[in-house]
Amino acid sequence: MKHKHYFLKIFSASLFFLSLGATTSYAYDTSTIPSRPSSPISLVDNEIYDFGGRTINGSNIQNSGLFRCMNRRGVVIKNVTVTGSPRYALFARGCSSFVIENFKMINNSNSVGGIRFDQGTENRSVVINNIEADKQGGHALELWDVNGFSIGNVNAYDTSGSGVLVNRSRNGSIGKVTGYRNNQSGGYATLRFANNAGPNLTVGEVFSRDSGRGFFTVSGAHGIRVSKVDAHRSNREAIYIQDSSNVSVGRGIARSSGSANCRIRNSPNSGLGSLDCGGSIAN
Image (cartoon, rainbow, N blue to C red; front, side, top):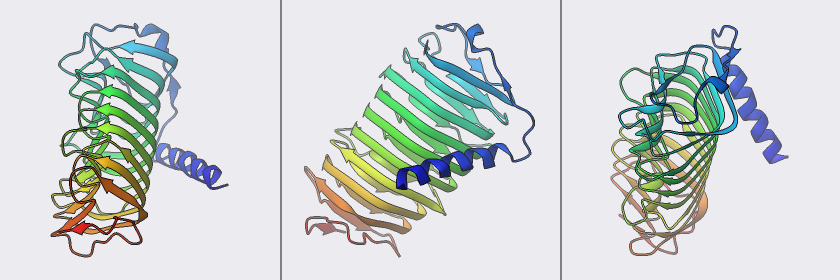
């Protein structure tokens, strides 16, 4: 019943965001998009891009995103796999009422990043669900300047950056982030909040294995509540709350391979609830 309630919540959020002043949406004929485009695919207002499980090779797109959403509204993109290491699989700036669903990124180790919502012009009312990245350069999913977002499940494997990185974004929820080998020998995390991210951010669960860190907040992140973290074999701290405020983790377990299991530093009104840090909480 818990899972049923959660997916109903995501579905309701999708309908809510799309109803914010939305006009009629139309199904774009994605069969007209080649399997290996020679130029970026610019998404258009109020169009539904359903690729039906197709794979799009972005190897020709080295200076931009394979998919671009620039100051658009009411776009839906779903059921697509991106390969070929484009600079970004999807690049968005100034987009609202935007839905991304069943979006995979496979064998893009030479990319700068996966899905990126860029800084500058605010992005609003974003719904993201069922994201998978495997062998991805940079961060699998990165948010900048997003006001209002609902993220369901994100699975990130073998990324050179974070699984999910949230920067200067607020009023959002994340269901579950699962990560293996996210920036394995570095300091990025399966889930990271930074650059004044917050407030009103909630996370259901972080599951992390063999990553730089499991859960990490830094540089002014604030107003973040995480229900559960399960992190093992982190290169550095499994959980690190640094230079943040009002950050809480409710429960779970944290184990590091080479550093403190948990660390809280210069982060007022922050805590780890009943989380098992193995007796190791550093500052």
